[in-house]
Structure formats: structure tokens, C-alpha cells
Image (cartoon, rainbow, N blue to C red; front, side, top):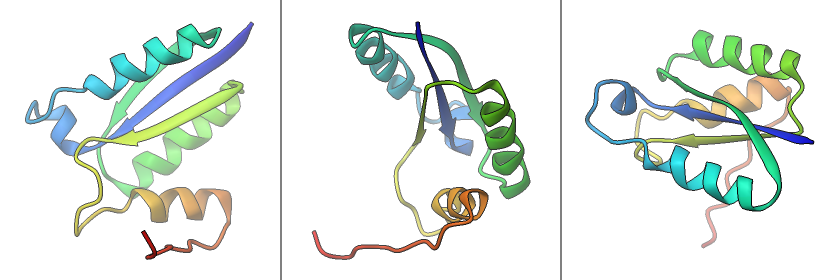
Length: 97
């Protein structure tokens, strides 16, 4: 059994401004691919919360972790920086479309 977990980041998801349709769509596709989706998490855009949750999920050892946001890239988006820091990898943005 391959396990998958989904982490959705974004204050807009928690305050109800945006409905988290990503979670349902992604879970459906993962299930079609044969994964068992064991958890959905929705947390605020706060560095320490993101780092703490990434550690929690890593300790659970899912086969796949998918991370998505609510609105996409915004001027105050910290998600990529937090993930880069957690993985101890340099963040490189490819500006070519």
C-alpha cells in the first residue's frame, strides 16, 4: 500500500476566503493512481508552523507528500523559502516560462 499525504498552505484557506478544492481533486487523482491518502493538513503561512508540519509529516514517512497553496504565488509568499530551508537546498527560481 502506497501512502500519500497532502499539505495545503494558506491563510486564505483557513479563513474561508478560498474553498480548498485542490485537496479533493488531488486526492481523487492519487486514489486513481493506487495511493491511499492518509491525511490532509491545512496550515497558516507561518514559517515555524510550516517547518514543524514538514517534520511531523517526515516522521510519518508517507511515500508521497504533495504540497499546494491556496492562491498561488503572491508577493508575501513564504512557502517555497520554507520548503527550501527545511530541505537544506538552495532555492532557484526559473524565470523562463
